[in-house]
Length: 479
Image (cartoon, rainbow, N blue to C red; front, side):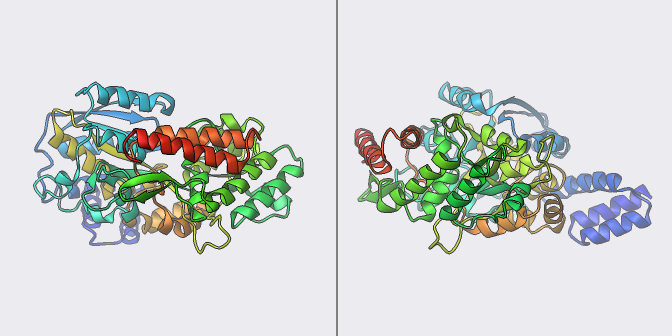
């Protein structure tokens, strides 16, 4: 009976039968769901091995430098299948995010060969790539001798593929002419609303559809004085404060961080559209944000929602996802909604954060490292993480089309799939690629803090910021 079920699982892995048919056969054969899933995972690994020599680097050990994250949890839960598929071993060091990027910079700047592959955000590759620290992965993706025929690079969402590729020319479009594929998208987050359904229902409020409505609703919820504040957004002096909700709204108003004139960049965050949006943003925080907003990072924004201290957050959709589970007080009470901040906009334009996999240029075993990277970003692993773990958001279109994944999310996270479907088409990186990204966006966040503290008006604050940024661009020879 076990052999019969194994044959059925292999037929499913070859896409000869549907998942419903698979589970129907399992029932007839008396095979439990857990056993069926195990056989399916094994069959998927076997199917991967077809038409490609996955054992070419048997006996090698791949070194990984990784951030502590649910994406990594999914990899650890599935890594035995990689070892079985390739005969390779995997060693990894995992660090929390507050020290992780320092670890990456230290490893790369010292030209260490300890780590072959590491996690990175796309923004960081604007520094790592031109510095010569990364491998251009186009040479692997486009080489049929190194990449399995069923890898299907085109299945990765196109905006994510483009957002992780850049020519290195300041101001040049992501994914444009001469772009080098500095990283492979692994999992990503777009920015939307997550809210406490009980709080909004009690206040007779509905999820805001734009920024003016968000300002008004957040104020209403705060003034109700029920022990929670209206809206959580990031506020610490960091580049990470600008890229989630703030830049998503900024882009939706038609504002840009820079304009490119003749190959030279000029700051444009102080445009009329930028000032209009920022005034609403500052008012929202002043009226309805947490008292110590200027200390808020991803963690504080999420924790407050999960604990019931805030009614809404405008941040990563996956942050709201995580707050609806685990041991959070408000587990099961969180809803999700797409938002187009500009009342005149036709659709959301969320800025994205993409956790990606990159290859160190100092690796002594690049070809073997690529085997790991293509397995970790494969449809098979992506599907495993999406169905069995908290691997949201997956980067492959085929996984988002999978009914089992969608049904699981819809059942426990009402509104999540709908907000994703509405937001994903316009989601990409809206920053202009340039090597001073971290310093300039950190200064932007510091300027935002001064506006919220009423130390400077929005108009004056953005004008002074643009003036300072222009000086730094000229000093760097790119403005």
